[in-house]
Structure formats: structure tokens, C-alpha cells
Image 1 (cartoon, rainbow, N blue to C red):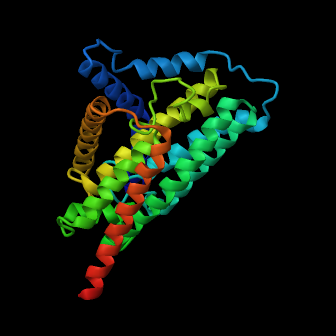
Image 2 (image 1 turned 135 degrees about the horizontal axis):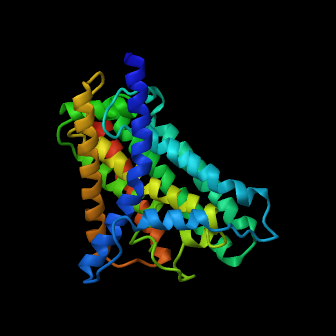
Length: 319
């Protein structure tokens, strides 16, 4: 019976992240619209867009290979698995042993690699432009993520997310400069990886600025619906990761009761939507930077993560 309950909650977590990801995008868009004195779309508009795209026919150019058709599903699968590994409302779930930060980075890196290949596959100038920029930003963001993981592993003693979340929720870590640096660095990486302002503007289609949109410009129909859902999942993944590590209040610990886990799920949704409102406010109050300044912006995350890890290492050595 206990195995069945654990399986049900594991499936609930996998379903929860994919169910709330479009809602998170809708909250961000609605917040930005309200702050700019526009009516804006309803919160459920991302769901409608996905359904509308899924019903349309997928138009594929003659120059596209089998890779172009295969990549949307691979990117979605890798992103969904990575998002489902993050403990959203409870630690110690059935598959928590595989919820390792390094595994999540590897899955996201694989998804980025194949999406960049798809952008190059058709041979358009926009696709090559977007893929080259994505490769540059990824080459800077991945080392920053590795350094952040190293800092968290030094503090919690593990790279497993359930262990890290349980350690942070216990209050033993306290307030540390290293954690503050890791939080700022992770936010910068999340903005860069999701193509949000100030790195990229997901609402524009200007060829001089777009990155993610340039790679998927040739997709349509169900292929575009799958890619858009994967992008929404990726945003939810990074916000869930920040919540899990730095805002773990309400997270049910291992072997918690059913009521505690349900309360954890409700608390997770509330924190996720609050983070969506904060993201909308941030994007409204700041301008997009030039593409050539993005490496400096993402490089700041690498330096913050490195300095935080170095500070933690030196403090432990002096003890």
C-alpha cells in the first residue's frame, strides 16, 4: 500500500509541473500587461494557444531531415523529466534517488544541444543565428550552474535535490553569504536559459534580438506546440529549483503524511505563481540589454558562484 501511495504522489508531481507551467506563463504575461495599463490576455490563454497549435497541421520544409521532426519530442521529454525530478511539494518521493542536480543540468544541456541542431538543420539564416547565440549563452551558463551546484554540495553535503531541500528546510544552513551569491547567480542563469528580459524578449520577433524564437522559426503545428510547452516547462523548472533550494517552506519532508503533502502541493503552486508575478514586475521595470553585453551578464553569475564557493572553501579550511 505504501508503494502505491508513493507512486501516486510521484505521478502527481510529474502531472503538476506540466499542468501549472502554462499557467505560470499566463501569470507573467498578465502581470506585464496590467503594469503597462493593458487589458492583456486571460490567464488560460497559453492553454488555448497550445491546443490551437496542436490541432494545426505541421508544415515541414523539404530541406529538413528526420532530426527536425524528432527534436521537438526529444526536447520536451528531456525537459519534462528534468522538471519532474525537482521536488516541488515533497522530498523523498519514489524517484527522488535520481533527482540529482548534475543529472538535471545534463538533461537541459542535451535539450539545448538538439534544439540548436534543429535550428541549423533547415539551413536558414535565422536558425543559424539563433543556434550560435544559444551555444554561446549555454557555454557561459552551464559552468555557472556547475559552480552553483558545487557551492550547494559543499553546504548540504550532497548534490541530490531531496537531501539539499531537506537540509535547507531544517534551518541548519542559516543565512550565509555563499547562499546569497548562489541565489543571485541562479536567478541570472534562469533568466539567460529561458530567454527572458534582459537577455532576450520572448514577445519579439526582431531578427537582431531574438535567440530562442530564431531557432524555432520554421516549426509549426503540433511541433511548435510541443516546443512551446517545453519552454514553459523549462521556466517552471528553474523557478521550482529556486523555490526548492532557497524557499523550501511548506515542503513536506520524507515519509510525511498525505495531508502534509497536499498542503505542500498547494504551497508550491502559490509560491510558483508569486514568482511569476515577481518575474512580470522585474521584466516590466528593466530594459533588454544588447546581445553583446549578455556574456558579461551571464559571466557575472559564474563569478558570483565561484566567489561563493571559494569563500565557503576558505572558511572551512580556516576552521
